[in-house]
Length: 549
Image 1 (tube, rainbow, N blue to C red):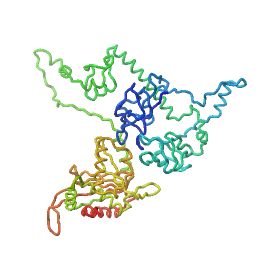
Image 2: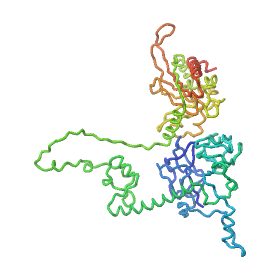
Image 3: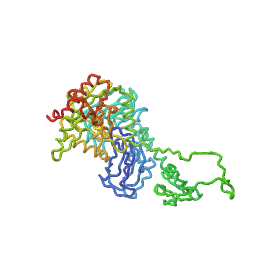
Image 4: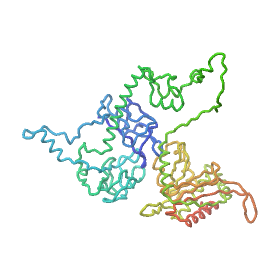
């Protein structure tokens, strides 16, 4: 029997995904564990493997297209199997409605009425929350803690619970608002993905029918109905485009795919000059991308008056030759996530910044000595990260997170290190940084930074930071201010090491200095606390031997 594969939720904040690349095509055999596609989330491009085996019968989201989580991605089944019902949203009747042949004293209609009477419907406004798939390999989850209890009001975006997956413990937020009416999995319990986790709806609503499982197919949630209608509409549009394209070709109109039309429009290419290599001469993406304009197609038509023999064209107006052009690049999932996260941080956190200048002469000398050891490589950034971890131990107020109800003090120290990648910025996290040596920190940073740039980093490796370091010194930036990486309470901006005249022992000498900027959330960190943290940080960096003890 055919199985519908939906767009997976590959990160805790993922709302939609982009299919970067399909590794299987329709008709290919699929084994359990095969990689179906590469999917771009709001954090990274990740491989999505199949949990089923069979033949890939249908692809619902093409390469480069975006689709919300839980919408139709593909269908896997037996070769040649009819999937028209799945595409149209019509599936087999639920097993609960299949009954034995009616006895002589009862008609079929009477039995149907009795069966229907026992089945409840989902009340209006009620939303059923199931155990989410928070990682690509997650099959079940454990509720580590509930942050809401039955009867509590829930707003969209509120954290409902902390769920332990096979990779990390992650916060699970609500996409609905109302009252928490029911909790189906208690703290410490484990349940499979897609099983009943909680129910949210209007206060006082009776949800006993939902809990018992007596829900009619007709009472499916609004989102499911919307998805079915969307699939039906997509199929109808596809049929319409096919028929229209055929008639357009016969009427002499341009026969091209929508993507080819868009690329041609962006590049200013006249589709009538392009030869199509697709079916029935249809112009496809590769035809437009490989198109080279001929001299005839690029020459500018001259005014009729100028083409008349023996006449000299008269210049009546002077115009500057040039082209005005604006191109649009679709925002990637990562850029959307960066915009949302940093926007929320900047507009909700009352931040302030503190600056300090550090003498780097001893640090430079110490680094040269350390790097003379075979198979050892330590950067200045590694030294800063180590110094931050040690300073956080002495100033726990900086190693906190703000919530509306309380301030969270973290006993663990996980330092995030900002890494520039092609599409934006990622923050891999060095777990338990204070317990690592300089060389261990250096190896961890290089490993995670490489994964981030190669789009191989996992969500678990980018979660849980309690403090963040951002370094632009390698670009020659001497000083800058960063936006706090929420829910951290502070972020350190590291500038370039600059050689300049400095005063030492009353004498002007050549020295090396580096500027640090600490941006703090004033809700958790006061000015004096931030200043004391920077003083401690300065002491560690200027005396690296203290970090080796």
